[in-house]
Image 1 (tube, rainbow, N blue to C red):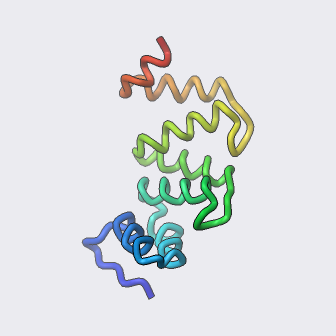
Image 2: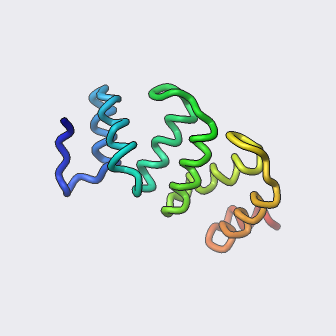
Length: 116
């Protein structure tokens, strides 16, 4: 059983569980309680990308990065954009990648510089 108080965010709990080598419990937190948490979604996306803690699944990693980006995780949004443009985890979609880049450029100076 996972002991989780309301004051401890899911991402913090996952870091503690991984630090204690309790990977199965950390995965449960990510899969269940972290579904609305951008940091948790990004962590699971990176696990799916690397294949070290859970089975490697590039399509799942791409989708999890999209979800985390939609919840405000900047790194996840950038990685999703890269996956869309390169075809990692799904078909390449250059027009969508450009649309995503243009959206990011509104608030991100480095994305804006890429469009210049």
